[in-house]
Length: 96
Image 1: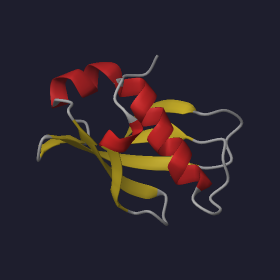
Image 2: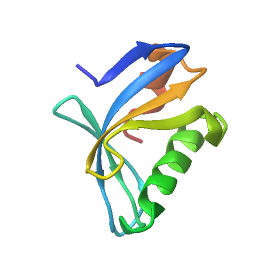
Image 3: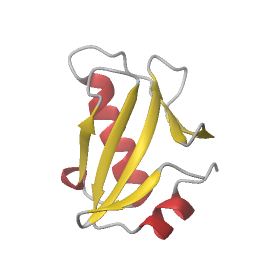
Image 4: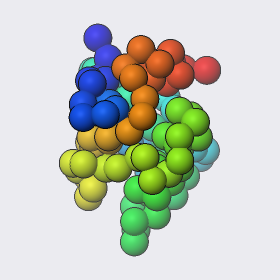
């Protein structure tokens, strides 16, 4: 089971981030959370900005449609993406 739920005009995704990774990208699903590797360090919001950029690119939505709703300062986050349904997100967020 994936950590994608329908929510208020979009979806909410449970995410586990790994900052300072050698390269950025999606890392598959682990314990019902999407693992996202971030090249940016967790300083001054750089990692959160990169996370928003990765979701916007992967789901082909504008950056303003992606909002971190919980966990801004931790590794476990909940991200709301407006304008995307759960089935589309599951298809697009699969490991490459």
